[in-house]
Image (cartoon, rainbow, N blue to C red):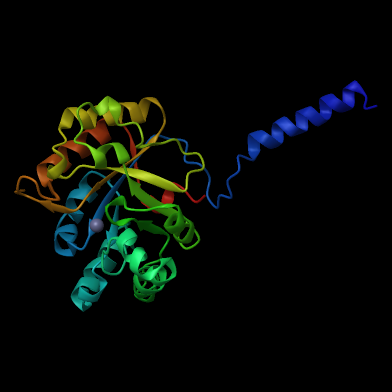
Length: 263
Ligand SMILES: [Zn+2]
């Protein structure tokens, strides 16, 4: 029979262990401050390069998920290097931007990894872009794909299911975008392109909740432009400015995608 004091000590040790060990195998600590991760997808390298001074002036970090790898020449590589040297992240979004589910139906998951994922990762690594993050094409994924991708990239971005499946009626209904800084292998992003018709009041709501609840919010967009067209995967530069202003006013810290997780 164990003594009462022994049980108390063991119980105490177990409690401390559970406090420290939360099931994650992290290589970096939880940030424990409210944060924003701004991400851009696809291959608008010129437009991304052009917003570097804007990002700098608001102390914003960005992560660029790159695809269409075959079209990247030396000029693009030079620009991407400057982007990385300015403190941003160049990450992977696949080699050709194919729909993984359709591709896998025809070719299987291993062919998808071999033909779409690894060549993009290898190309970017070879050119000096350390690969830790990946974003799913249109957030399309399933468990089989998740399992393979998780073994390759420590940080993966999906998209908000609520936002993807229906036009937002009430921003309060979009609940799957707040990363609680716990163990989470796939973090969902919220699209701020004009196609989603997101307004600045909705952004304020999201940022207030992020701040109040000590969360991290991940926004994603595609091509930043001075003048956008309705229904396009583009984000107006003036809109970005407004968002950055609010982020700074609320003292929400900006991070690269690779900084926030490491499951
Ligand atoms: Zn994309």
